[in-house]
Length: 414
Image 1 (cartoon, rainbow, N blue to C red):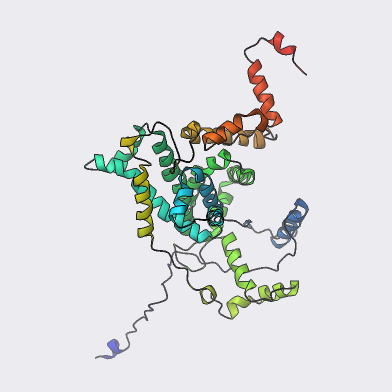
Image 2 (image 1 turned 120 degrees about the horizontal axis):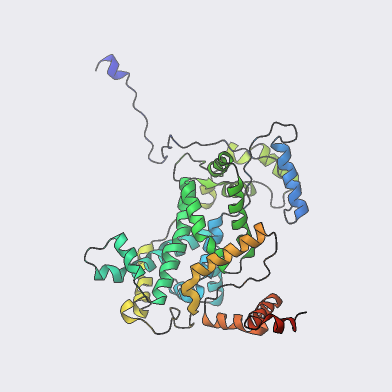
C-alpha cells in the first residue's frame, strides 16, 4: 500500500443518523422573551402587534420583514371538519368498525382528540379503503384501466351516493392529504392549490371562524406585492432537521418548543421560569430529545384495518353501481341523505363567493347563512319556520311577494 492510499480518508457511515439534504436551508430559530398576555381580546392582540412593531424595527426605521403566524395548523382543523361533515353518512359506522363502541368512545373519535391517530385513521385507512371500493367497479369493467379513463368514466355515472363519496374522497379528503404533503415538502404551489380546493367546505357548514380566516388570508395574499408574497410563502414553513420531507409550519415549531419547555420547568411556573428557559435555550443546551420522554411515534399496521372496512362496505353494497338503491342512505341505513348533497360543491362555492363579496367588498355583515344539510332530517328542520332566523323569514316573505305587482307589494311595506 503506497502513501497516497494510506492517507485516503473514508467517510464514517451512521446507521441511525440520516444525511441532511444539501439544498434544504435550515434556519437558526431563536425564541424571544414570552409576553404574559392572553390573546383573548382585541386589546390584548393589539399588545402583541405593538411588540412585533418593536422587535421588527419599524419605529427606528430599521424594519425587517417578519412572518406572523397564529397557532393551529389548518389541516388539523380540516381533519376535524372532515370527520364531522360525513359523520352521518359513513364515518360513524367506520368508527364502530374500528372498535369505538360506546358513546364516549365515538365522541372521542369524532372530536379528533389525538391528531396523529385521527390522521392515521381517516387519511390513511379510511381513505385507502374507500378509494379502492370506488375504483373497483371501473377496474372490474375495464381490462386496461387508466387514470384518465376513470375520470371520464366517473362523469358518466348517475348514482348519487357514488358521486357524493367520490367527491368527498378524491376531492376534499385528498385536498387535506395534499396540504400536509405540501407543508412537509415546502411546496407553496401545492399548498395553495390544496387550500383552494378545500375552501368551499368552510362555507358549506357552520364554521364562521375558519370561514373568515380562510377568506381573509386569501384576500390578504392577493393584495401583497409579489416579492412579499413569495417571502411569506417560503418562510412560513421551515425544516429544522435539514431533510426535505420534514418541513413544518412555524406554529407547529412553536408548539414543539412550548412542549419541550413545559417538561423542564416547574408544574406551577412563574414568569421568570419561562424567561430563564427561553433565554438560555435550556432544552437545546442539555440535549433534550422529545423521543427520550415520549418515545418515537409508531404507526399502526393498516392493511388488516383497511381490509376489514372494505369488507363492511362490500357487504352493505354501499357504492355498488350494479345494485343502485332508490333512496340515498347512510352506510348503516340509519339516515336518508339530503338530495341536494349531490350539488354540494356548487352550493358551497356560491356561499363562499357571497361571503367574500359581502365581507370584503361591500364591507357588510352576512346576516343570512344557510348551511348545506347532510341528512334529509336536517334539511326538513332547516325549512321549518320555527327554526328560521328573522333574516331568513324576511327573505322567505319577500320571495312570496315576488309574483305580485309593485302596487300590491306597497300595501305590505313597513
